[in-house]
Length: 398
Image 1 (tube, helix red, strand yellow):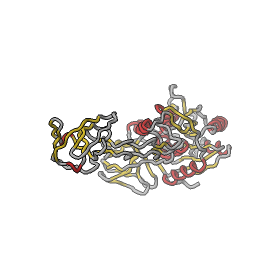
Image 2 (cartoon, helix red, strand yellow):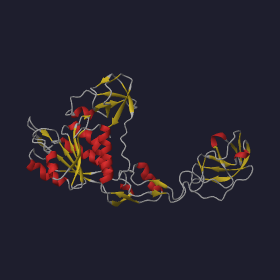
Image 3 (spheres, rainbow, N blue to C red):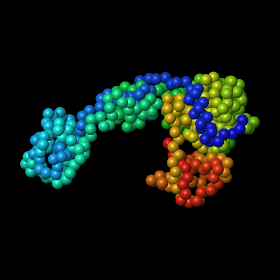
Image 4 (cartoon, helix red, strand yellow):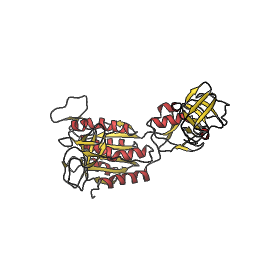
């Protein structure tokens, strides 16, 4: 099986999961619990927004054609009150921000440009019809779809749902994601490892990434490097909506993940991607469940989930679009790498995000460098070097 480029691998994941993923189930959730969930049905406006023309400023509701000049003030309208006031030729009504416009008025004179004396207000400014007025329906019309199915809800969506009266929201059920770490060298995080052992950090980082991407993680026991130990855990993991296996996917004598999956009838879509960290990377499907065999080095596990496996999980969550934002930033120093692979290397962004500095790191096991980073520089597979001040793509840590 030929290795794929990063772009080819990501496109294939999206294609396969869109075509073969089971539609997620739907459940209702309270609005206060809706943030971060994926909307399962379109939400439409229940009325025009605003429902009536409103003032955008504190000042005076007027007829633009009467200005400049002196007008008689015939009352006051505050936000939150209904008024039967109207404005005729040579008249004005004092109005507050957000208050409904009186009949006959077509613009608002800001209080900063008005001189008030008793029931008279004078100004030298000119206005055009519609100035500082939010017309009825300018933001949304009744029945207009405001949020589409498949959107992950953020705080602004929650505000909008409350605005249109949705106190319960139809959302997709979060996918269950099984996580299996493999290796004889692994002990649990609470144990004291011997010099030849490491703690099971990958299962914990994957669990955090799964939660952030909208899934429900289940960490299964560590699989030792025998078929007898690995096979039942892989089979158990395939009962979930997505299976993530960390380690055991290279070409070594004890890399048994692919044989274990093959014995369960797996279809493999690729087993190597031209990226670093993370070249040995398996993606396929077995017993109706998609799986990823992620490389076991911690940086490789974290990066490959973020740039590839996350897309599958988001699609299984009901998300419609799975973009991977990769903005540009200016390098603060010269940078070079060996072409042929797309590399994701730890880096720090300037406070304004305009500049990026690659961090020194010791390879795929260097977790402290990844933890210090707030981004990854993306070294294009076809370019060898960049000069300080040149633009380079970056991937933000979520």
